[in-house]
Image 1 (cartoon, rainbow, N blue to C red):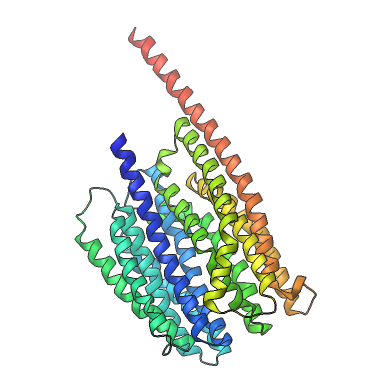
Image 2 (spheres, rainbow, N blue to C red; image 1 turned 90 degrees about the vertical axis):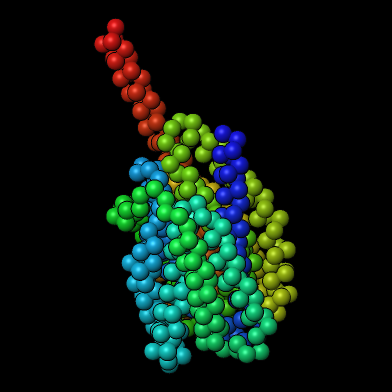
Length: 428
């Protein structure tokens, strides 16, 4: 038992390290853009990065994370390498078209931006699929190495900042450096001895993931609409300012993403009354630690990011306060969100997200029609509402899920005891 605990602890630490490397790479690239390009180019690149990472979020929500959670009822399984083609490639094409229809049309260069968007999408999505292939095989070291390769190349942006002075050059560098990381992940994956574990079933992952996927799709809509409206319709520079300041929340997002992955990897353990009690203890500890870390961290992180990026805006203080509040609320939400998804209650998130998307659409179209908004800032209004509703909604979802699973576990135990008693009487 002690050896198993140490092995799991080591794996958990590596998962957090890998998530930190992936998130840190995006932050460094965004900060490099903030220092080396003008406000318009920064807004364009931040939208390209946002759309690409949104497709990553959808891929995880629809397929990759549910494939881990499905182990709770179907037993251990590994994610097939073929999902890179069957899932990542089509989603990359959709992401590229979205980049072309937004950034490309605004830049009057639809074909070039669509092609570049597809290239970025293929690299980012494929690398993420390969990462989950490695994680499902307990080859976390491979994920860490491949992402570290990408990070080391992205750090070169600081050195090459005098050359990468357009959104197009930054996006191309991001994609080309990511290809090297993909090769490293593939080499590690192919060298990994074949396990006896079965392959994850795409149909099972889809049936479970359709609800979390719908939730993520609505979340993407709620995030993208105000960003696109602010940058492309209102002509405001708020989008770039928000994206750079949101990079200060990187460590919080790292911990949140790590919780989702770790709870998913251990979901097969949460089937008994004992397992559910352990889950409840983990959630309580995680909520307290996340809030404590977020409150003590956010203000300092934003000051550092502003200093490094050189941001200048008359609304900088207000935007900083909004981003900080959203960060703390999100940190408090992440453990209950992760626990709900690990228990298989993705459907609850879709209901909650429908409310947030409705609010986002109303705010976005209202701003487009010139209706008054708080601070004339659709991004701030939507993010504050979404963070508040997320905390309340996922908190309710987790409590209901835990109560229902406890009743089911208790009923299963009673049925097992009854069967044993009947068997004993027959034997006597």
